[in-house]
Structure formats: C-alpha cells, structure tokens
Image 1 (spheres, protein in one colour):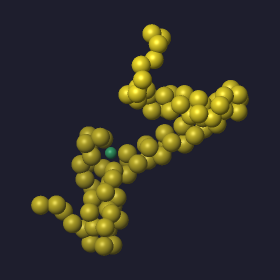
Image 2: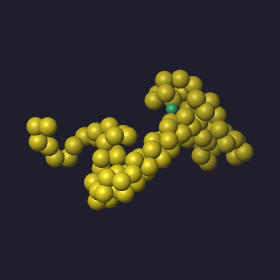
Image 3: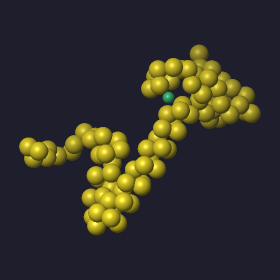
Image 4: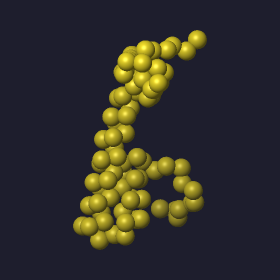
Length: 88
Ligand SMILES: [Zn+2]
C-alpha cells in the first residue's frame, strides 16, 4: 500500500534506487516525489552543462548547436547515439 503524507509534509526519508540509500525525497501532493540528492546532482550538472556550452560558444567560436552537443557529451556522457559516427 502506498504511503501517504499530510499536506504539510514537504519531505520524507525513502529509499532511492539511484543513490542506493535512504535519502530525503520531496513530497508532491502527499505522495513521495523525487529524491532531493538526485535533483541536486541534476542541478549541478545542468549548471556545468550551461557553463561549458557558453564557454565553447564564445571562446571556442562554435555554433550554439555544436557547443551544446559537445557540452552535453562532456557532462552527461555520450547518450545513446541516434546515428553512427565515423570510426573515431
Ligand atoms: Zn537519489
């Protein structure tokens, strides 16, 4: 049975499969929401991604699209490619 919380509850301890431990989770509408530690990590990564993309665009004199793509690969790792790249 899913656990419910009072309306005033903003966070609660719960197991996070990504963190592999008990963490604080946000409570959305009395239901357990996303893990706060994971959200924090995503925020840090997004900031880093934005920063890198900006640096590449302005200092590397790169088109925004390319700068964003390279920054994404560096920060998030290569995500499942939609098309095969060359051998290198
Ligand atoms: Zn987590």
